[in-house]
Length: 223
Image 1 (cartoon, rainbow, N blue to C red):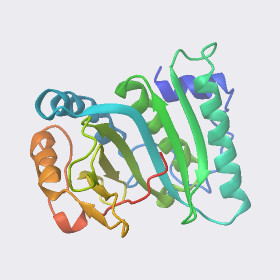
Image 2: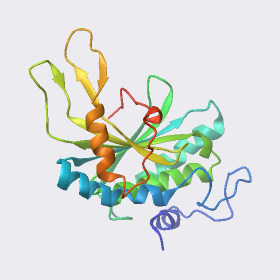
Image 3: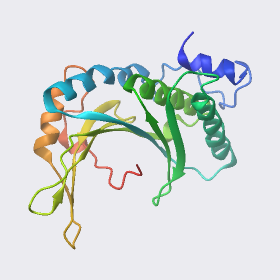
Image 4: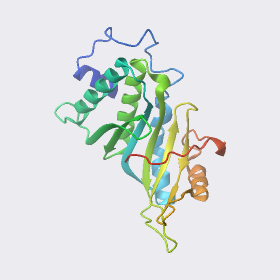
């Protein structure tokens, strides 16, 4: 039995009792690619061994909000699902989570876990649940955080956390390496050289978007 099915069994979810607006309930659909996300585990090993980037254990799934009662019910459903996951009496996963609406109105489910395998399993379960509730088109991205341990330089720049972003719309990953200036203008910049290094390192293990114009930055990630 898969991880997602274990959670549903724990929650006593009836397969015939679904609020999905007649959407095909199979997880294999144009908006969810669980296998693409699962391939991240091997990429993490390569990033650690070859670039010194380690997973921080933090990940977020970003969803475009809709002002509707059914969307609020979907969020409540997933909050309850994640509460089951963090209850070790039900599932022996060592994770924490919280959900929030950011300053731009997007819904975030933020996961913190010990292993990338657990994080990926939980993220896929959340994505699958959003699909089953009829909101696949609202899924925007998964953001996986890594750290190099580098904290700054003499020019007042800070570059520590780096990211792999999975874009649901294009079904591919791309790197995002922000450089946050400590100067008064607080100008947002990216380390494109490091992003290219990351892309080359993991391009044979995960689905990478090769068009740099589609490497959309996500500033002010709420974790």
